[in-house]
Length: 138
Ligand code: FEO
Image (cartoon, helix red, strand yellow):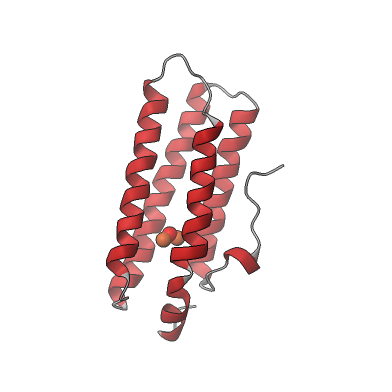
């Protein structure tokens, strides 16, 4: 069973491009979780983990560009959350890379990434829907 399951009602921010990004993040987290459960080798897990972080950074930048373009009033707080998650995700990845003994990710790491993404989309991201839709971004 997938770790994260998308449904528009809970997760859509009503902006097509950003929903597409978020769905891709769900897919990457699920791919990482599947690889972990299947006991894939460390190199495989590390590659998916890196892809997840890279795509997350790409997505954050896309949101922040929209915030700057339309002068979103909550830009700074939102950006801070992005920066904090990026920092934590990179620290988790460093820890994973440095641990020679452990060949699999911990479920704790997976739960952290899952909860963070869910909470961020449902809480912080959804706050921009009305503002950006009002600027014609849909
Ligand atoms: Fe969709 Fe603010 O990340």
